[in-house]
Length: 419
Image (tube, rainbow, N blue to C red; front, top):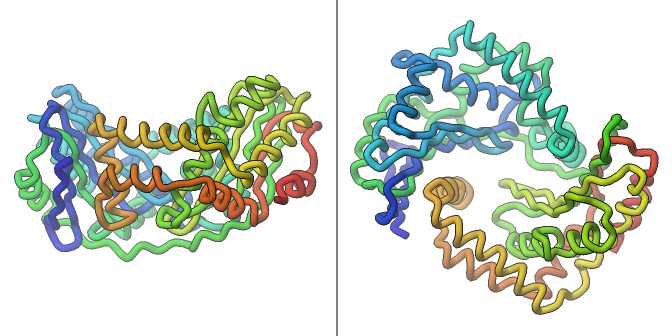
């Protein structure tokens, strides 16, 4: 792993991870701006901007953007999260300069033509509709909103149909102007790249980029609670959760190990107890999400509505049992799964590029894989039990969607989760 960092202009950093034995590279720009940095009245603007950035610049039409990257066999993509937005491309080594040129162009010269905006509003409204029609997807938005009500961290990344239909060119440009500039932008690359050549190129490509305003968002205030929606579906979908930890929390790795033990694979407790032993669900898993100043721990399951009254007590029981000492073989297996995930990701230029960007924006430095593995290895039985006790110290969050006649009250669920 050969990682280098440069400041290519005041406030704008470049981080590269050179991989000499590959023939490709992933390069992108990560922006410290996402859903939680939006005001309520323009919820969804970060995601709309991500769409509109590909719809034409002063130098390229939308079609030209797509054709130029695909003419060389490359892939150009983007995503919006609650704290970040990313624009990145994967290309052959000889096309890195082209990829950076296109990304720099769309981030500085997008024109946001009215006719394109009109079309893209309709596209995003269809995306919202598709999410609404996917219960095991939209349930997590409802869960997030119940856990973090009336704040940026709880609002949906896609926004709402009503707000999206009202987003105009000035709202998108204003959001971009406030958020898309140093020091809230980071250029990252991994693969067959020349750091110095890329540093010189990035300095020229972003020379005219104006500074952004300091990041501003509501602090994360976990409150917990419930969301229930009766809907005519074949399955009832449940997400049950608790407050997690932020990226810098000393219990971060213990919480990750706990999630793996509880519902991270076919050998996990939930998979074995809920699916294999009782046949209560086809899909059941545990997940942990971390943010700059908070987090969420969640368990998802989809089940026959007639068996909800069997499923929920089992989920609660398995969560509470995590406060008891786990066996040495079980702990070793969970740590091995996490270590394998870290080390296997090193084989992908895209994974390495994204990890570098995230680490730089969260911690201000790249974190060597050996350091991550050592922290995973250091998680012991006591650390897992402590992490579980922390999770269970607060009010839970419950989101449920589908036929819910057999779902017990929120108060009953909360009582089951008292350790």
